[in-house]
Image (cartoon, rainbow, N blue to C red; front, side, top):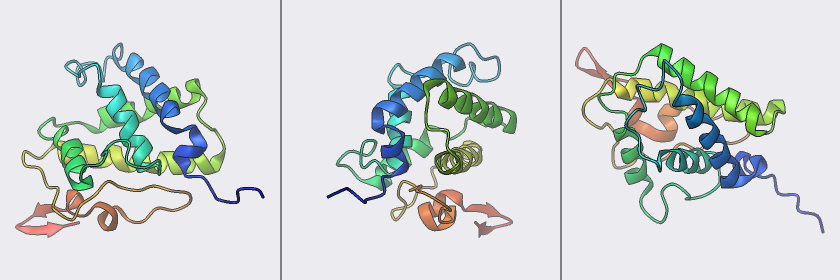
Length: 175
């Protein structure tokens, strides 16, 4: 009997090894990029593997980033890496562009359905990273968890991860 189950975007892409190839290719480019090299100058050698696991888990692979631990703790750790870095839109855009180039280079699926799901994660995540990089205190709350991206439209980011997208404006919390 054939398996009629629809694979997650991560499974469809080739699982964790596909994301590891992607991040290895990407960070090799970053090391020589005038815009991004300074941002990642002090990253550890395990950084590409952590990002690969994060992308894979958020794309439906299972707990390859959070492990058996709390998703809230995993999200808090990821957000914490961006605090106080004051990332710019130019840096965000370059990050996205190099990641897309790397996805093409390593042969991630190029069909519109996969790329739409992949780009939803990349666009959303990079914009949240810029927002959180302006903060000095971690906004991840006890009910927050890793975002989940699947096929088609995704749920709104405020719904998915909670407080990391709410920021004080004139003493009010605004999503």
